Length: 248
Image: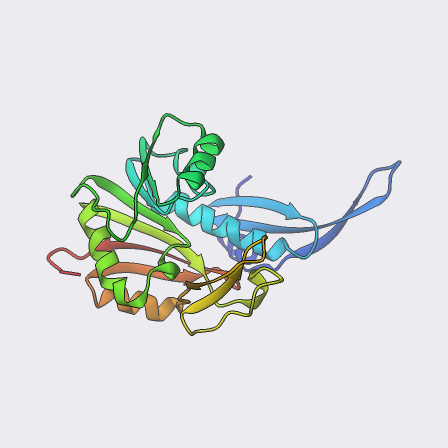
């Protein structure tokens, strides 16, 4: 179904709507519906309960990822258990997925189950990617774990991996208290958070929260052009390319 431009703009700006559906012979069911508008395409999704906004923002980021990264060879840094790898294999001819955890990669391999993926177990702070090989680099919820003192070094590594016209896409957390686990301490701008495992052990980890506009400017100052957006409440996501002749 085709929509006029004014209708598309209205749909894109619409908040969640709670509706009730009912079968003739059954009880009413409450649901929250929303739409994601991508160009002239409109995707209608629904979810029950209070997490609807979170899923709406996930869908927004997923649509942006699909649009930003065209088919080709992509490097995924800190691939984890495959929540994003499973999206990358749908439109890329080759995915090189790197993570320091063999256990996470094992879960990723089982979840994704694709010959498109090449897995590498490596420490991202010491691993060097092949130079100029990749059409795109992706990392999800990793930039916030890069210590501030390693920020420039990390982006230099990303630059090394990309072809001249390659593109980066990333997603990470906004500073949002309700997105943490219930038994974790509240997050702040200190650059560190305490994480409690199921067995009771606690660790302090690096967790740097970025404000989208400031991160966009910081990347521009280091030779990257593009954008960094907020999904609303939970995520920031961005897409950048190298500025020709610039050094990070």
